[in-house]
Amino acid sequence: MSSRGNFSGRIGFILAAAGSAVGLGNIWRFPYLAGANGGAIFLVVYLACILLLCYPVMVGEIAIGRAANSDAFGSYSKLGTRRWGYLGLFGIMAGVFILSFYNVVAGWAFGYFLHISFGDLLNHQDFGGFFGAYVNDIIDVSSASGLANSNLIFSLIFMAVTAIIVSQGIQKGIEAANKIMMPSLYLILLGIIVYSLSLPNAMSGVRFYLVPDFSELNVGTVVNGLKQAFFSLSLGMGALITYGSYLSKKENIASSAIVISIADTSVAFFSGLMVFPLVHFLAFKLNIDPTQIGTQGPPLIFVVLPQIFSEMGAILGRVVGGAFFLLVCFAALTSTISLLEVPVAYLVDQKKMNRKVVVWGLALLIFILGLPSMMSQGMIASLNKLTFYRGQDFLTFIADMCDISLTVGGALMCIFISRQWGIDKMDAELVNGNEGYMQSRTRSYLHFTIRWVAPVLLGVLSLLIIVEKFFGVENLL
Image (cartoon, helix red, strand yellow):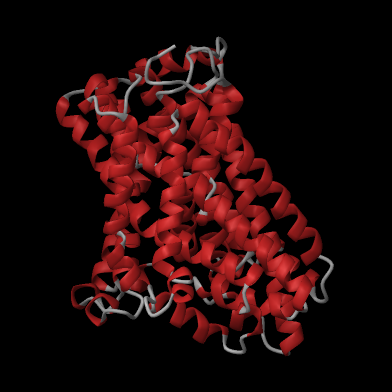
């Protein structure tokens, strides 16, 4: 066994990699993107992107990591040249910045879990006003109770829990945590779905989510579906290269990637099946059009859903609302663990530094890097409206840059496999644990996608995102 640590086996790897994929992208981002992009038609596009593009990229990333038995920088350097190593370093830095804003949103979710379960959030009449004040006033030092309810403290606690888990290593930390959180996540998710489907007008939400209207299909829907699929599966930033480096040679990468894709996709699917019946229930209660509340973007989770929970009554609202935000916290934590492990693996492998020292040092650094995102929600005007970024806030800017980095990283990874490392060497790695791979249709499918489809589509997508975000040419999408 490698001194770096290994997963105990196939199940441990799949749960950890699925945990890396399952996160805020599934439960926070997927529902509001689906609501804003036609519901069921967005789901169809999302599933197609997972199958046709994201699965081959995932297989390629895991194969690179296991073949090199190293972090992202070391893997590209070892299998290619040191110049290619900078692609790994690019992915590592992308992961650092993703975690910097991701932890802020995770802190919001943790705070909402506490405020709903043990506080009086559901008694508020203006949920939009509460959320605005919550994300604006990041810390209140006027009293001990104010300090304990500060967004800054919630995010700090979330980062500390992440660091505690990662500092314990691969099996005792990352694998053990995911073995608890992933089953718990599914149980909570399915429990809320059962309840949401019993509510008045729930079936209207189900129809919106499961019956596609192809007149809603456009380029923007396809682009948003591909961005969401890529972000959701943690592709293009070295996370799966890093996890792949801890995978035994006897395990089947191709079939493991199928299970990971199904696990991630199922959580996204179930999240929509949970949220849209709730949205249509509230629309029925308030006698308004569901599109008025189902397409509100990020506030869907932090403004609309708490209003729905308040309509359920004091006790039931606390139970269902608390369970929902606990679900969001579990999903976020499985991803923050992998995001922190990526730079940790780099410093442990390349600089031979002590894991615990590296983990806590990076956790503090990344938390500090997240402060501008935290303060950009109204606290500091210059961060709330960036003059160089069309008046968007700093958190949105970082999130958009990370979207671009993932698609660029994925495109370059495919080029690396087909032009530098060699797709035949990827085949040799995939044969380990899968003796029938060379004669399978999967091999032809992976070759065609990695050589031609993925680099072209991801390259075009990167350019479209850049044009849209920096120049505001939204009609392209």
